[in-house]
Length: 212
Image 1 (spheres, rainbow, N blue to C red):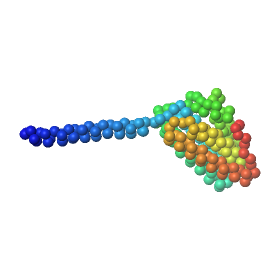
Image 2 (tube, one colour; image 1 turned 30 degrees about the horizontal axis):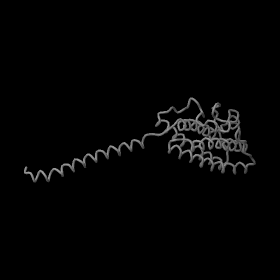
Image 3 (tube, one colour; image 1 turned 90 degrees about the vertical axis):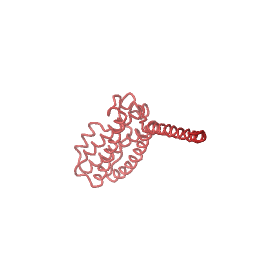
Image 4 (cartoon, helix red, strand yellow; image 1 turned 90 degrees about the horizontal axis):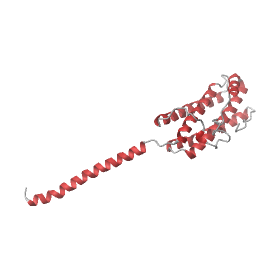
């Protein structure tokens, strides 16, 4: 190879090598960024919210299943809407917990909410808005308009508790997906409370005190 040809090829070889190195570095950085985005971000608050709100939702589903069989069509339609929404969100939250390699139930319920639960959470471990055993028994035994009123009363209070929990989570969780879901829960349950309040008043009922 003559000198002139070597002088012409050398810059080309250097440019090709530089291009290959640049592509490799770029792919490595891009891959690292994708891994960083894909890696779940969560704190004890994220995990605690997902665990406790799943349990909270499960009672809402139970209450839906206790609605009297002779309930009016508008109540039955509301029950179906609430049940479907709560099951969908339970599945979503369990998916988060599995992705975070966290247990589905927490050993220290409501600790993540601290003192923000209007007398719930913290040391008591009590979830806001939950129905007690006597109330669930009464709902199971109720029928007709009385059963509809009791269901609406209990579910309104239950949703108020869920809004407290989701509202706190929307301000304190670290994971953007969980935060968006918490905001959506506040909106969805607020809308359902508005509907249930109208239905309750139509039946001559009044909302239960909250917090209990």
